[in-house]
Image 1 (cartoon, rainbow, N blue to C red):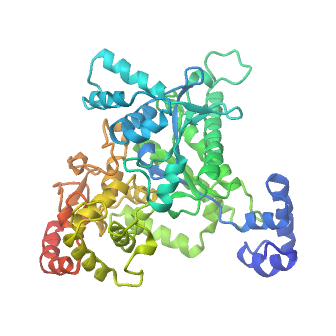
Image 2 (image 1 turned 180 degrees about the vertical axis):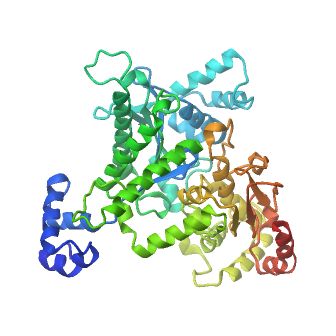
Image 3 (image 1 turned 90 degrees about the horizontal axis):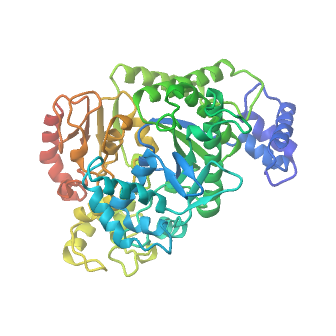
Length: 550
């Protein structure tokens, strides 16, 4: 219909019923003209109409680490030097050291084809194992020097951001499509380094050595704007489809400049300015959502308060005869009265400690992990000649439990095409650990709610990692390999932020607990997958787990 010429009929019969009742067809006509005037990318009424009825993007807020969220790209704040081709900053250093320890092959690719430091990578990893603060002065200088060894791509139009010059888009895209990337090249979100230093925050033409507060905030918001535009430019060209079957690209940003950027005393103003700037950016680009990642509880609480004030403003203006494309958080307008009532009721239960979570496969699927059926098919692919879907013996219509029983026999009877022998439980654990990556946005959103009890049938360890990354600014260390997360890294302190993992790591007096009903990748033998596993579960383990919960 949008491709046709009869826009008047389309507006009257299709579009008008789904827009606010206060908008008549003539009002919609005016909005179409206004959007064509505002947005240079809109050339026809059909394009304007599509933009008008497309659900707007959203700005999320979570408490965690910007390096540890499953997104398409993230902003890494720091001090950029085009002359030295270097990036300096706490987040960049942690990201780089993570690659040194866990993703050496990717780091080698990022250093470029002329890099001759493959042997040095081993030395760096050994020196890193001494700890964050240990080592001699020479080792510390060596560690600092390696951050300048990463070739960066700079932009003429965007002077406050840069990106890795040798990012392996083709390898990552092939892994997404066919899961056939070279072993050891673990996929990570695209890094965009952004300038946040106070020295480069003075207004152009100013003679001031130190910028004013407003100049500093304006410079930080310009970094945010350039990050979104550069990320979308690169992703649209190199990664045609968002990760994890999302509808839109997902971009993560910390609260810029409030750590090492000397804007800690401006945190409130920075959060508010970021929220407004990102709201405009997601409204004017229909293929992106953004998430502000707060590293401590105070910043997270403030950001939520800012969002709530925006939401209240939308509610108070709900009868306005306008569909402003740059309205802050205009996606809240999609809420129907019934949805608002449900949200209010859930919030009331949560604040009183009466809300419990039951987490299914949809939560980790937002991080790219498979459903149960897709997981079993992936195990079958290990035994086919080339691992292609058309070589499978079992179709998608077969009962997954029957598939699991057949695969259990197959795994025990012979090795896979690479000669490896392992039972189905070990294969499931290995598969999920290799592809676990970072927790999904949904996992962080759920972990932020004041909920004390979680129950899950998932095998992965995303919930443990999401809790470990909360209030990251107050912690010294987080397990760096996302897929090989060590459950022992979860704090055992009995406070509101600690998590008791039942039955694998119960913590007496912990503020929250999660019951893993069907096993965990940390203990492959505990995984419940075959019909015999389910029978044994009903007979014995179910009662034991119930006792632990009590």
